[in-house]
Amino acid sequence: MYSERIAGLKSSAIREILKVTSKPGIISFAGGLPAPELFPMEEFSEASRNVLSKYKSSVLQYSITEGLLPLREKIASVIDPDTWKIGTRNIIITHGSQQGLDLVSKLYIDKGTPVLTETPSYLGALQAFRLFQANILAIPSDEDGIRTEDLLKAIRPGRPALIYLMPNFQNPSGTSLSIKRRLELIEIVQGHDDIFVIEDDPYGDLRFSGERPPSLFHLGFMSGRSRNFIYLSSFSKTIAPGLRVAYVVADEEIAGKIAMVKQGTDLQTNTFGQYVVNEYLENGGFEDHIHILRNTYEKRRDCMLAAMGRHFPTSLRWNRPEGGMFLWVELPEEKDAGEVLVRCLERDVAFVPGREFFPDGSGGNTIRLNFSNASPDNIEEGIRRMGEVLRDMGIEGP
Image 1 (cartoon, rainbow, N blue to C red):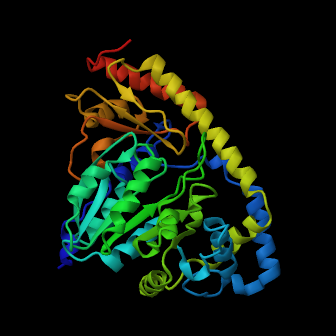
Image 2: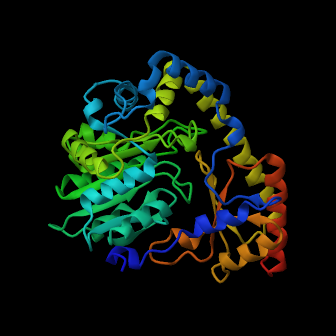
């Protein structure tokens, strides 16, 4: 017999779609994948040689649960460059942000614990929360992020709860939480000692325009509420996902608890990967690499938007995110994105239907499109084929 929490678990629909996209010739807008041709291969080859030469066998040995100290020092200097109140004791290196979600879930979620999320929300987070049998409450969102007035109504005084948010270029919708709502959220949390905010920020560095807003963790820290905020980020989207090097930033006591939970999960994040990431950051060039990513992804976003303007029916609606990796498309309400996917796969084009990202099962007429992983030529051709499918289905078009 499996445990109770496993009985209702099901495989990720996105992972099942990605299996199909491995077929040769498929144009995929499905995965949230960085562009592999932009991975810093030469720099990483050099960094790997350097760490093996400098640190010898220690880079292949067990290490401490919290993570490599020099790497945590670099992260602390980025998170808090001015006051230096955030230190290495606030930071835990994890195997990707997904592990961070798992560890925080283990720390806070019992069966029935309320978890309040945006609608739509990141599927990987929903899976983690469901595994621990959370009571997921979907809060309406719009182009400015989660609607704080609805969030406040859903909070019950005296009942502990988690709030999960992706404030910057959210997966799947690409929207960002406005400054106004960030400040409103801080005010909401200030009135509730038993509310904890998980801020998941893997895309914050991938901003194409405008200035990066302060994180919720920073705003909470400056308001004296650091215990209420837990910040997750990763090098998966900015360096390479296969390294699985990410981090959690939290109040020192909470970080210590997360380290204890991690000890029972995997003992530590891989030593060699941490050393190589640290060496790469130390050698410089990371900011130049980020600049290349931003420029490339911005051009691909613009390419996709232009192709959609040429080929998609006029009855569809879509957004224009200022960064990240995703566009969000809404079909007419009566149309089913799952049916569109089936027909697009027949034309060797893949995407992810939006319903999977809605905790309440709504969103059947929505589509997530990834623009970071496809070439401009494939973007143009894939969107053209999708447009033909949509018109063949009788959706109003140009």
